Image (cartoon, rainbow, N blue to C red; front, side, top):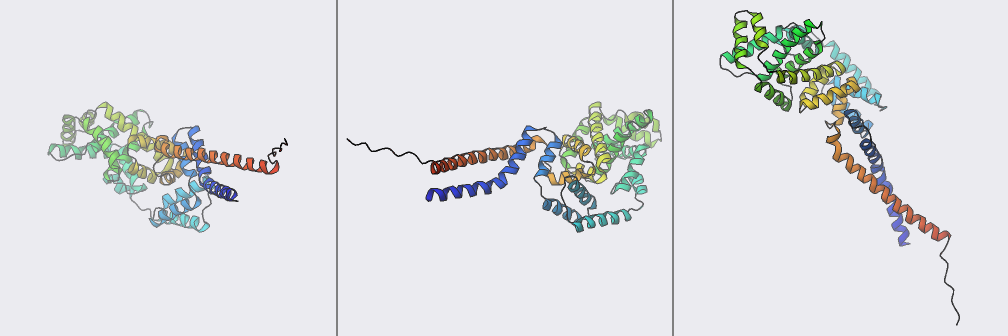
Length: 354
């Protein structure tokens, strides 16, 4: 009787543990044996989320008056077959309508100041940079500080320099470099607003600072002061070394990709969360797959969107799956042996008579 009781307890424990280990372990094993890219990592992370997780994230977004994130979560839920409460979907739609009605005339302010607190202002800031006005303004501001011996911002200088170069290239190539330039302008606006990730700002800021030519920057300041725009443009081409220009152009291209696929707020969120230019590349590739649902992937995924960052987790769950299978095999073997003994009892030895 005692042996049967232990068997029942073992079986109950195996079933209880299996409800947790089996789905997670199978998902981890599939991830380990499948493609090792950002999309696969995101799909694995999202497979661990329940409808309650989606609903809670959307509720938090609405509470923070972030209808864009709430809509992104709702879209991702729909794509993955997750059903959200009807009233939640209705409140998300109402919040989007209200936000659209609040859109004012911020584009002109963005054009004049380069500040971009919302989509309309960003459009104005980008428009100014596409004409070269914004980049000349920023370069002159920084060059004037340099001439006065004040603190300068190497990253703003680098972005304005690359932006001016792209303006000329956009004209020469009939707009082919337009998206890159828009990405640089967005990056500059986010940096100016203080919403750029400190780690990302430090990485590209150091690159720009190490590649800065002080004499060329001085010449930009004096040329603009004399209203000699041609000389200022010529000098701006020497402000930054080629390797830094390549790095900033690459980052600008990723920003443009995210913006085109997922929108302004996702771009700002990415620039505020990414720890490096490499992470921005990851998010850019994700945006190609998930579109406007990218921001929801970033939030629900928790930032661990690469194979390497999740290796420990998937290996642990894979090991738990192996242990569960081993336990199940052991239990099944023992049970089969007991049943076999019950159906076919062991033969009794015959008593020999002398």
